[in-house]
Length: 477
Image 1 (cartoon, rainbow, N blue to C red):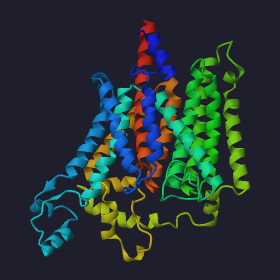
Image 2 (tube, rainbow, N blue to C red; image 1 turned 180 degrees about the vertical axis):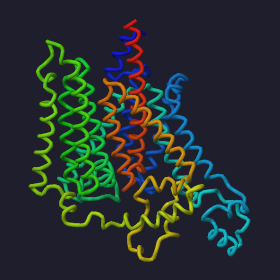
Image 3 (tube, rainbow, N blue to C red; image 1 turned 120 degrees about the horizontal axis):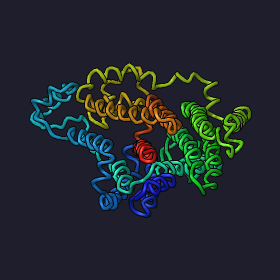
Image 4 (cartoon, rainbow, N blue to C red; image 1 turned 30 degrees about the vertical axis):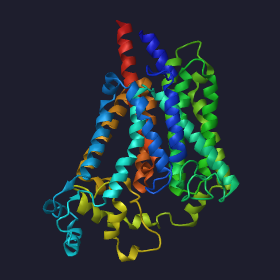
């Protein structure tokens, strides 16, 4: 296969996998969109979600080749290590060893009082919840293996994510229009009256909208270099404003800030891409007027976004902004929990309390002044919760993943033509990272699938950059 043909395939978003691989990926995305928007372990939707997601292992294994697996070995190894960590936490340990583990003394003494002192227990303090975590990995595993097997390009994966973002925005607006009793809400426990879209939590919906806006902005820039895709160049700006409007109608204060951040970051992505494009076309006499005046291209969408956001705020159609002004946004339970999580980290940072165990373990640390009718089921700080549950081994895997991301983004940023892509990746991972400090979006199957596809899309961008550099060397010689 010639370099020219490879370049054309990459531009169109086609890989060398099955001819209709994007259809299979789209079916998985549709399944997760309809059933994977809740983070609760007892949501009824997880039964069809995990059952049907398991069937996608069939095409994934059928189309998988050794070369495709080798190309994405870093992500596959990291994911396999995480699965191994969950399984190790479920292995039974002798009581003499188990009682010496941090934080297990009270349970061991209770066992002795009840006559269960000879029981072998796994490392996790909540085996049922850890088994649930192991089962939940079916969705991201299917998404990763299927995308690798189908050799999906970055463009294909980002298009699927953008489609999910548009679907969520449309459904969210319909939910607001039809009211809190609308049958359009997909989950029993949800923020009725708000624009949650295909998710159950309005914070998660707002974070997803912010990520979707960045993806749409990146796609709008990428397709400009693809001939014959004028229709996409019209769709992406409209999709961006649709998602923005849906996010402005939400009641999440953190999500409102994330959406505004996504707008600013999208402008930075556009500015970076325009700067690269301007340097490429400036010397050409046949270049278009807009190519010679990148500031105009940047100013128009920024002004439109500011006008839309300002109109929503002035007309009092932004509940999140109203809440920020009316209340102290830091007077929140999640901030009061931080000292408690510090104690939990001190007790369980070595081996972890068990993945999925936070809710039950927190109750053994919960102080009397935080007791209330509402209960805490997540830490609202996924970085800390991961270490509390997974210990130092989970921290090592996280550091390994972050190191790989930094290395990939740095490589993209060092190459001038891909500098705009690097800004996009920095922006979207910044939103995911910051949102995980105050909430737990990555606990939902939808975000897990999107996160896996974003990582794989980053890997594809890095591979494409290397191929392009190789082509340049080959053509120059």
